[in-house]
Length: 79
View 1 (cartoon, rainbow, N blue to C red):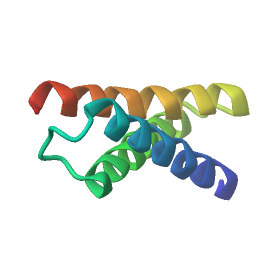
View 2: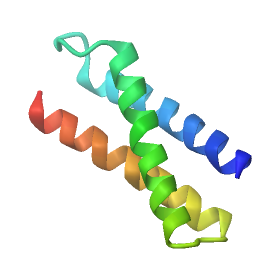
View 3: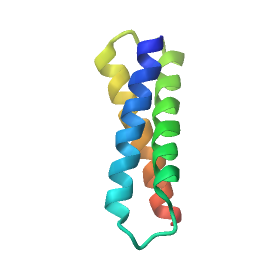
View 4: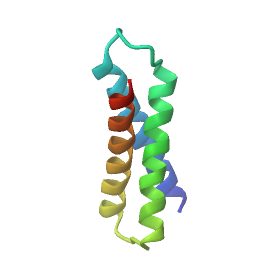
């Protein structure tokens, strides 16, 4: 369980960082917000995996990445 949470935090942190890089400097969204959105999205993906009782680490990692990407995409559409 702890490994899953840590993996989600790392995936979210990297996703948020890459989101900030892709937005560039012309946005009102700060670095901390980008990283927080990535982490929250990743944790949502992890929670979905836990609810589905996923035991495979690779599948859980994919769900973390998809959750982070989905929330980041929503934020990109809104801003």
